[in-house]
Image (cartoon, rainbow, N blue to C red; front, side, top):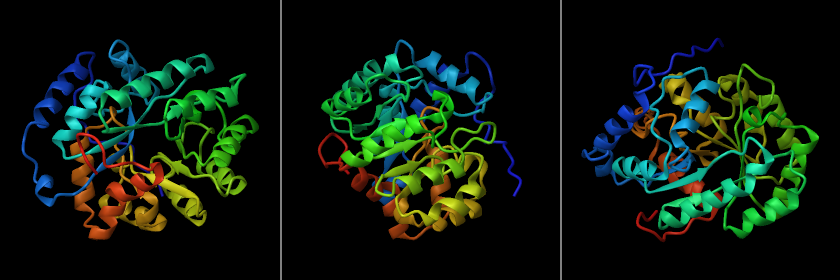
Length: 312
């Protein structure tokens, strides 16, 4: 099936677009939303956050990597995530970032841990690792000592093939320790994280809890949906997918995996929360499917508690 890459155009491209969009979505967060009347519990399972002093630069770098996709371009800070998410009825968030160099790992993980503490129970943090590290066990020990609940990898940005030997060292350790791995999956432009490579990881590590982001393969959704559901240890999230799929096709893909293996996620700050939530509602899933996708699967995977200002 030939895919069309024309996402919803939420802004006009331009260097001043990011602050303008942040202001717009902050205002949107103050408005009543009909979803609140449904009293759905919602966790956003896929959120990138950055320190305030580098956040806009980081967002611009991601924008360049993805050829300027016209997403929401929120500012990437934890504060904006909390504000806009609360406005849309999202109670908790899985937050993370990616080390592009192994030397960044500890600094990023300490930042994620500090953001978790700041959010008063609303954030659950995942740490980053880099396959080129000289101290993988030490990096993972420190990640866990910070209270982080899993590992985030992005083969395309970190420049490694998802199933190569140095990445497999990470999977092996995470499998041994029972730590989930959230991995960016799919990109038709590269050969780092396509569905065949993700399938190979799932075969090699059958006890690994692997979250294949973007419904298993960004821009490669059909191939992913044909290959990955056979592996019982795969979980997928919905991030950066609804902008490119019809409601009918998204529903088919979700049901190919089964709602018990799908988690709602937005890929903040690339996209605003409201369009993704509206898309979810248009799929007209069952109440059980909504409960599983919106919060139950994620809460179970990461062992999330009911403490904090937003209770699950």
